[in-house]
Image (cartoon, rainbow, N blue to C red):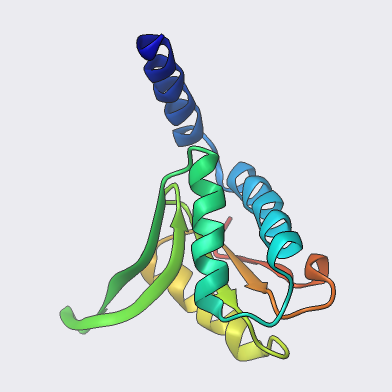
Length: 143
């Protein structure tokens, strides 16, 4: 029974590694709705980030949180440039907010993260909203 379970886990991991950005985005959106419905609005960003990481891990996705990405300028590494909230399957950046309103700078910030990390898709989510479905925004970089 343990061998079957391990085999199922390995198959699930292989399947999630084959997912493209759009497939991952679909799974992430479902997880966002679960977290939002369970926790509601008004909490700190870190609470939503931890809950979302937990939900996505349950889906057998590879999740990295608060990973530092260095910035290079003029062929010189400037040191730690920024931190990604969540990176899903090494493909999709998840930028989490809990603010009154998303502003154009939030979108531009995520687009810069995508460009500097050579990723194609980011999801900007504002959990501080009466309707979460309006606050999940796709930001694309040559997708």
